[in-house]
Image (tube, rainbow over all chains, first blue to last red; front, side, top):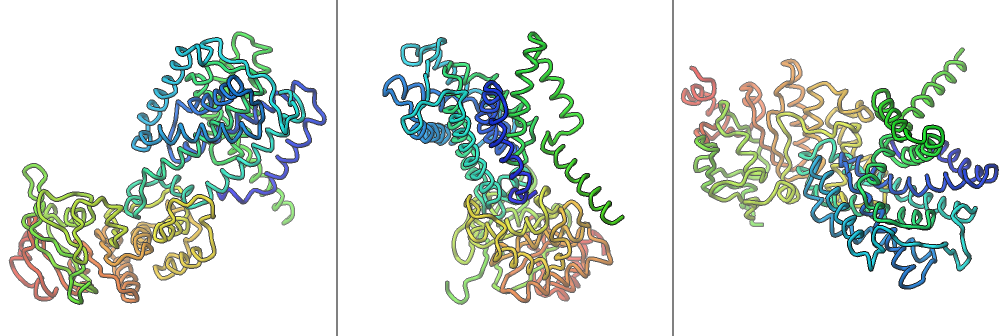
Length: 321
Length: 251
């Protein structure tokens, strides 16, 4: 699938995301906002999965972005999104540049577990250095500002800002996946021997992709910090990382649309499942994951593609008839 | 580069896997523009020879020279960058991609753009070049097919085409006709020879099939337990009883 060839679906999705907040109550806007920043981190995980690289530690970058905000607020009193988004991106990038030096050497279960190990080290550090990080109490973030104007987490402003960031990130990820590097990332999953014998430094492909994924994690963490208003060491915990992988599998990791769809469905399931089955909402998620893997391993995006194809064929059939 | 510098030279190359000697004081010189066939019984060190040249294996001792430059110990990707490409006995393809996409990857790699992440890989110049290369290999009809849908002979050719698209100076082919039906093998080789004749690539191919060797190589190297036991024009070399005994196992 060429990632640049679904303008129609992209247009419809963008229109829906732009228009929906005008017709729904604030709490639904907030759920979609949560889905938006979640999808950014998931895109990072999904891009790595495209190369067959599974990470159980991507919360490392999410927490890095979130705590970059936390420290800016605590020490510098900066709440400005236009400064903090690039800062979070840079923090994620810098962390990935360091950790990636090791990660680029590993694949498969070692890659997954080493990522987990690093994220848990950050979790431990955030917990222990409480005079800096606030320990298990975390840090209170307060309200974001955009050009100096306050943006409440459930406001139109914050929603549309998040949407704009998702738009930019989606564009970057699409360009990446359609570029030589994006294709060599897929090739990594297909045939590393052929890559090596094409004169391609396989580790560099992993490293550069890892930088992108880390940066996305950082950006996601910035928006999350302001949306939730409070950051805790659990942002780096393995459950958070697992959630990213869950959503990537739920939505499908073919490109941009999968993580977005996955994140939206995930947030709504979480909200409704915890409302109707307060003690068993994880079980609901588990059952859904089971169903997805059993019947449609490509995730929600693959289901959408199938339906679209069937409708297309039907449409053509009608015309012929 | 001096006029008479051989494109490839192995100097006293030795390698063994435990007790098995795979290269025994190999001294092979390959001149530019040759089409060289390598034959030998199973385990005689033919594939090891390719692996030693491409850096997949570093020899226990000795040197490998590419156009006079010492490439011993370099990893395959560096050797590839210096102008050596290879195909494999079992084709190494990008299984999730279309035939054309695979070509685009080779062209991107040849252009040193494997790491570029903004401009799309589907660009006009690469596409037309990729299609032209596929056409010369007779694979253009498959351009938009997934590589998994190709028949074995075409998979072999694509494996070679991917290496060819890297624009190497030296192309190594490991059994280009193995797994290809008897009817198709000459067609595969004819295609190869035609494409290679239009380039200035020096080619080495390992082959089990005596007919193929006889018909398509200009020079034959016969391997036996890690040594070159005969070297020369195919009609001379293949006529020798010693060679027949070594390669075919009987006279």
